[in-house]
Every structure is written in C-alpha cells, then in structure tokens.
Length: 440
Ligand SMILES: Nc1nc2[nH]cnc2c(=O)[nH]1
Ligand SMILES: [Zn+2]
Image (cartoon, rainbow, N blue to C red; front, side, top):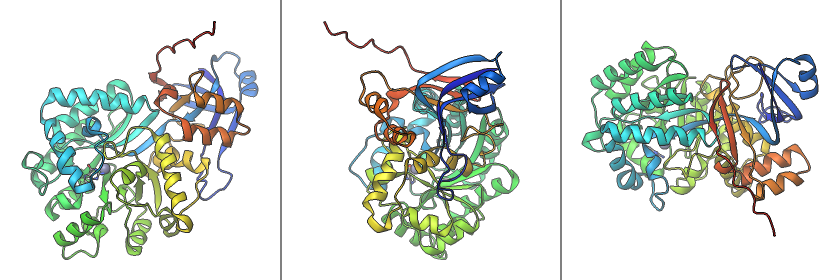
C-alpha cells in the first residue's frame, strides 16, 4: 500500500448541478493498494490509521485526477498547428494527406509512440481516440497504449466517400475489420473499442448501418463521430441526406445516438438536436482550441446545459493546438466569457470537472476514473511547476485552493506535469530539472 501526500482537488459531482462540488484537501492523502483508491482524506488521519503504508511525499504541488480527453485524433500529431483554414480546406490540405500515410506500419508505429507519450506527458490518463482508417495502424495504437499503460477508447475510422481513395472502405469491410479489432482489443487490459465513422459527410447510409450493426452486436462498445462543427460542412451533409431532418438525424436514423455516443463539436445545433441528444443521454465533446483555430464558432454551452445535454472536453489534436487539457479548460473559459449573456461563466471547479469527471461520465467510466473517490483506480496527475516559473510564483502566493486551481488552468503547461499514474502504475515522470542558476 502507498500513501500519496499532497494538496488534492477533485470534483466527484458536477459543479453545474452542485455549486460546492469542488473538494479540496490542503494536506490530503490518497491510500492506494493494487492500483485502487482505498481511502481519501486528511494526511494526518490516514497516516495514523495506516502507519505501515509506504509514504510518497508530493507536497509542493497539486494532485488532480488524470485528465480525460474525449476527442483526439491519433494520426494528426504531426500536423498540429496547421492554422488559417476552415474545416473542409484544412482536411484537404493538411489532414487527409497525412492520414493516408498510416498504411505504412513504420510511420504508424512511430506516430503511435509520439501520440501516447503526448497524452501521458500532458497528464491525460484516459482518451477517446479517433484511430486511423487503416486497421493495421489501429492495432499499433492499441499496442502502444497497452505498453505504456494508458486507458484508451479507440476505433478504426471508417468512410466510403468524399475523402481520398486510400482512405475509403466499404460497409462490408468496415464491419469485418471492426469485428476483428473488437475481438482483439475491446476489454483487453485498459483498452476499449469505439465504433468511429469519420462524419456523415464521408459515410453513406450503408456505412452508418454497418456501424449500427457493430453497436447492436457488441452491447458495450462506444460510439463516436463529429457533428455540427462548421456551417459549410452542415450544408454538404444536408445535401447528402435529403431525407434527414438535420445532422443529428443522419446518426439517429441508424440508431447511433445513445448513452454510448460521444459527438464532437456540436457548435451549431438546433433545439431539436439538443432535445434528442439529451433524451438519448449522449455527450457533446467540446473542443474549444480546435473551434477557435478552425474558426468553427462559439460552442453554445448554455443551450446544451439548458437542454440537459452532457458536455465533456476534448483537445481535437490536430485541429486543436496540442494535448493540454489545461489549455482546453482555459480556452473554454475564454470563449464563454466572450459570448456575453449567451455565455456561461465557468469557475475553476467547472474547468476541473470538464477536464476529468465529465469525460469519465461520457465514456461510462465514472465508476473507474475521473475523481479520487474510494474504489476508483488511482489515475492521477501531479502538477508541480519548476522553481522560477511564473506558475511557481503564483502558486506560492495563492490565497485559496480556487485561486490555485485557476492559476493551474491559466498558466499550466506540459512543463508542469511532474508525474502521472494510471491504476497506480507510473506512466510518465518528468526528467530531472535544471538547477536554478545561483547568483554570484
Ligand atoms: N476537427 C475535425 N473535424 C473533422 N470532421 C471530420 N474529420 C475531422 C477531423 O479530423 N477533425
Ligand atoms: Zn475531430
């Protein structure tokens, strides 16, 4: 058993429902055995009750639940930063040419390493991942995630039109390869499978039906796709599905809108779509950096909440600008501030919830990860800014835990991630810090 001592913060409940949902232990501790949380509480009390536990002293930083990124693309690591284009031009110019390279196992294996280490070194312990169009590359992604120990929910991306020939498949082949991948990876170790049509624009009704067949056959796999991201995209989808009421209906008709569904973006939903998403308890994965970079629009968070739609957060690498869930939280906050009365003023507690527990709920993993409640896996990120950094200075002078949390979102980066665990296993540790220069 290990006793981790630190300033702890987590949100076991939603601050959108319970205003005092943020739980803070200034001198707190988590007792961990076999990767599971056995107790969470004050250090003094837990130490007295468990004198034999091995101590891990993490004072001087903040321990948070590992981040849950509910929308991120494996084959897009190397194209992060392709700024200046709207969605469909960005796909044609930067994204699809890079994704076409993943038929080469050498390329796919190298990027799988970059991708998984990118997630872990930013404190992300669970991710819902858009895989590759190539089944062999999806195998390599799951293999690398297993080697490192990260939790991934991932799937082969399937499409049968409008992209480029190398990225197209058929409904029959998509079903067959999906079945094989599910058999090999779903429920193996920390891996889960997500059925992943790229978006309705690139998936015919037949392809969506093949996805639905997998969802019916495997009652526990997840579903993810894109929705209502960009106005031009929405027009094209309307033309491609003349019989559908709206974008959501293209998925709804196939039976793909359920509690197991996470739909990324939802920047331009109608009231009908929000009502149906809420009724079927599917999640909208909000990707604020991507929405800003691609000029997609301002996410109507207040309307989602009013309709009762569950919302989580995603980086959308590489439309987004990196793996940092802290940056996504800050950008979500900025965008809501800029929306005036239509915005929702987010507190640090909301940001923490969106970056952790909300994602676990979206994936149906809230009994396993997302907060420090007893029985959960010990999935955690230890943030400890290097001495001399601005964040270090601000934390030293923070007057409350809320101010500390706000400063972590405002200033925190990959450089502040000191250590990361999944189910008690260390999946990342920062290298030695350069000694601050001594003044002579
Ligand atoms: N942001 C984003 N939207 C998409 N819609 C379809 N494919 C993509 C993608 O790769 N990124
Ligand atoms: Zn995306």
